[in-house]
Image (cartoon, rainbow, N blue to C red; front, side, top):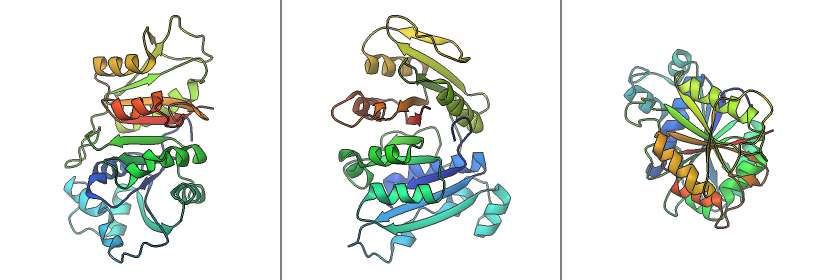
Length: 273
């Protein structure tokens, strides 16, 4: 829900080791917000691997490594101590888009955490725009991590380093609700996190509602966003979206592709009202 931190997080996983960083982010966010974490694997009709359940990310093992629960704690003990519920689901669908969309609608999920990596698993989704189509269809916020990013959650310790969030704003996408959502998300993980706003253009647009200082820069939109993100040491770039405009415009050599592939940190897409 816009204006509140996510409470029902879904992490579609291809069950690979490379997706562990995205899993760590999804798990740490769920703990911070005392929500529900759904670990979701979409199997096609021909997939029949009885070992899939054993390959699912190990929630309690990671929580114990972080020192949040005792080693050997039961699932119920972990849930009661942390105030978090954990769900593992494997569903069969010929379409990953429809499979994910149906699941998140049924379970009222409000944040999707996705790992993108080298032409396997979810990278196949990205190449075919399937991940973006799933996010569009669900109209839900999505956190994208690349395999070459450590992100803002340390996989080994659970430590959070979300200090600076950069949110570009533009006149065609109302930013206020997205800003509130991003601020609530960031402050749930780090109450001292700073959300900085940037507009790329000649003049600042006039926005409805109260917003903090907006930095004004000129130049190419994506180049300027990425340059400013590096300048301020952004740990996350949050992009308000509106339908097929903004960050989640289709991957056709667009600014979206550059934002996702060239950003120095994870990218968070949040639909604007």
